[in-house]
Length: 111
Length: 79
Image (cartoon, rainbow over all chains, first blue to last red; front, side, top):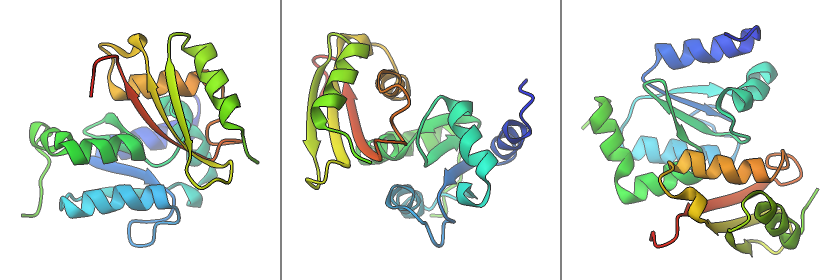
């Protein structure tokens, strides 16, 4: 385990929520086009998710990159597993792989 | 801060020597790029692992000097 308290907070968010998006801004008001694109895909798929605004917490903003060995935000996690950033989520949405992932992981969708 | 497309290509090829790299400067501003990278090193790896290899090759520039790089990675023969 890391001594960095921000890493613990990240782990708690991921453990406590089936679908978590670390993003810039919040789901209602994304502050970056890449975050907005992922919010849009999740919203279209009617998936309930927790948005964590990294702009509101610089420790989390820096530590999330270390946590996943991934240099950019947004980052999507499903059932504790890092799925990817904007490009991967967009590609998986287009190919239907994201739908399959939600099905396989038993993620609830509204419709 | 911006980076030249040739510099991005050079770094990716240093980290992933067999890579075929195609780079588009999306807005012509030297700051928003799309890269398509094909390498045999990607075979059998997840997309996350493939992108991590490219990010490693960029040595911390991604998210700093390099603001936006849309990344697509494939193993040879994949779509």
